Length: 89
Length: 367
View 1 (tube, rainbow over the protein chains, first blue to last red):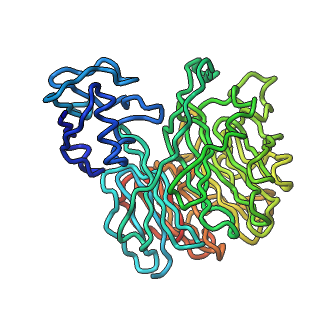
View 2: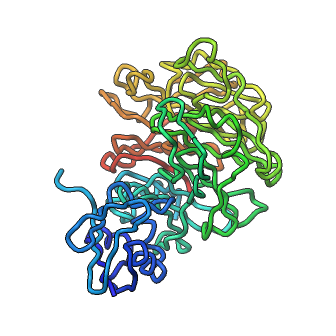
């Protein structure tokens, strides 16, 4: 299982609790999360299923590299963090 | 509740009781509310939010704003493999994704539950179930002329005006920046360009009258005379008396013919209001003095209305959805980018300042 956590900025707009979801890629895990919480999907992904421009997705401590198809691999015990890709200002 | 209006602002949605002078607690505090409207058929309120980083989201309230429920947002189908869709101005690929749900318009009175939504990058969406789901109107999205559309104020084209024809369901006209106006009489199965006579001054001279690239900022229809349409265009004021077959330019309208918004009297097609600004290069009131202009003779002459509006310098700009008129034709409400909200009970002869301290206002609609 992979633990999915959303930053505080998301919680203002949509109910997105921490959940553990199975899957071998970021796309599979997030897809599983969105199946249970369909309203969260469009806050993270655009119409084409790519990560929104100002959203950052980390697998453990690393930014994912495939923001279009979400093919970055994850394994049991990993964590996915979803942040707002902005700071300051 | 007296005369009430929904005010969509840069920092939330407010319901304002104009008679009582009271402003509700904000809904969606901190979020940009692009557009908000009450559906007269079932009383539902709809709000379109632009969360910027987190995309476009729509909400509905079935209890006069006490609670809100998120509903579906318009979503584009995948761009087919191999299809190139260049914005002619930027030469960038148009991404098939909703950038803005610019306007939500309840459908015809005989089609309860039908909603229309105009979006950037130029798609019109239809819902048949009160916003639970949306479908791109592909017949309009696929018109060959779309390859000429480009953005006006935004990078890509957008639909901001949806003029329902009260004579029958399935008849509507939409306004596009920059893509002219398009009309259907068969429920959206087919579309005809309806912008002949509009003029652009930001393209080469031989393309000035190309209907496919006109920039109407806002188009409104007279309910009692549905063939009459008015538009505040980027390059002037135009009127049509034949449901958009032809547009006639009004060249003299008080301080300026530039602006963003227009309202038409629901029963008198010759009466319309505008809020002029200097021009596209300087988008502030002429001489730093906010005024409203009104014609009562179809555009032959204009009154310049100032009573109750700022007497000192004012740099308020009123956006395309920042002016609305109610069913009586006497009450108008107007909100500005400076966060000022005015209304009038007598067709603009006298304006009352409702608030000078709202966030920048994007849209106003009477309930």
